[in-house]
Each structure stands twice: as structure tokens, then as C-alpha cells.
Image 1 (spheres, protein in one colour):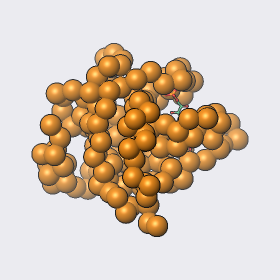
Image 2: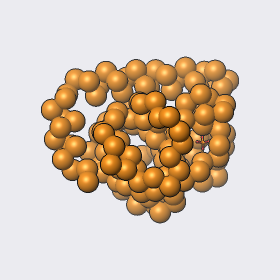
Image 3: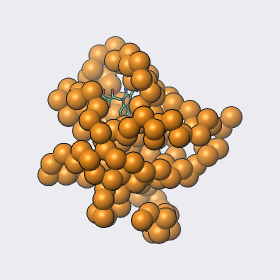
Image 4: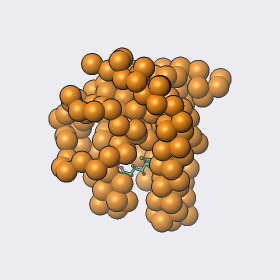
Amino acid sequence: MEPDGSLPYFTRGTVVRGFGRGSKDLGIPTANYPEEVVERLPLDIKCGVYYGWAKVDNGPVHKMVMSIGWNPQYQNTKKSMETHILHDFPEDFYGADLQVCITGFIRDEMKFKSLDELISAIKSDINIAQEKLSLDNKEKEELSNHFN
Ligand SMILES: Cc1cc2nc3c(=O)[nH]c(=O)nc-3n(C[C@H](O)[C@H](O)[C@H](O)COP(=O)(O)O)c2cc1C
């Protein structure tokens, strides 16, 4: 099935602590969802890297990239949904309400030869997301209305 079958896909949940590698190892902080949010994903949203929109609590809508899957780099045993929001937050927001709208697919998850290559791939994902999401400001307005 096409990876875009269920898109746009809205979901929301409380931000929980991940494995703690996000900012330390990679310099790319990610907000993790609890298991029940991951389990709600429709079957046709396959593992991979996606882009879309995100809103933390009552804040503004920002662009985001999201990794869905098993993090082959780290051989996780649990499937995760990790959102990197394209905005500098002054501090962590564990416990906050995170609403997201996934609008497009970027690539499959991969295992890279080194952490540096993973970081380069994520930076390229961020550039792709910036570009795709900048094309359509109308989309942002329309989708923003779906956020509470
Ligand atoms: C945009 C994006 C793309 C990612 N791509 C991959 C990938 O291809 N392979 C992989 O193993 N992990 C990938 N990750 C997951 C990172 O390995 C993960 O965010 C990091 O291990 C931090 O995890 P933690 O927040 O649970 O500590 C990606 C994460 C993001 C935000």
C-alpha cells in the first residue's frame, strides 16, 4: 500500500521520556509519545520518516519531522514515534500535550555506518520538511483549524 494512504493523520498525546539519546548523542531533541499513541497508528502508516505540523499545549503550530519505527541504529525492541519540532524550545516539555498532523512521507528508517551519517540524514530530512511545508501556507492554516 502507498505510504501516504492514511495521510494527513492527526494524533495527540502526552510527551514522555524517551531513551534519552535524542539531545545528548545527536543534538536533535525529540519528543516521544507513550505506547498507546503508537498502538493507535493505522496499519497503512508504515515505519519511516515523515513530516508535518505540531502544536505543544496552547502554543503556535510549528513544522516537524517524525521518526516512526524501531530505530535500527539502536536496535530498539519497542516501536516509537519521535517528533523533532523545527523550533528552538527553551526547555524540555515532558508532560505537555503534543498534537501532530503527519502530512507526508520522506524515507524508510535505516541503519547507518556511523552516528555522523545518521545525523546527516536527519539534517537532510529537516531540510526536506522545511521545503515541503513552506510550499503551502494555506495547508498550515487549514490544518491548524483541526488542532484544538
Ligand atoms: C527525522 C528523524 C529521522 C530518524 N531516522 C532514523 C533512522 O533512519 N534510523 C534510526 O535508527 N533512527 C532514526 N531516528 C531516530 C533516532 O535514532 C532517535 O531520535 C534517537 O535515537 C533519539 O532517541 P530517544 O529520543 O529515544 O532518546 C530518526 C529520528 C528523527 C527525528
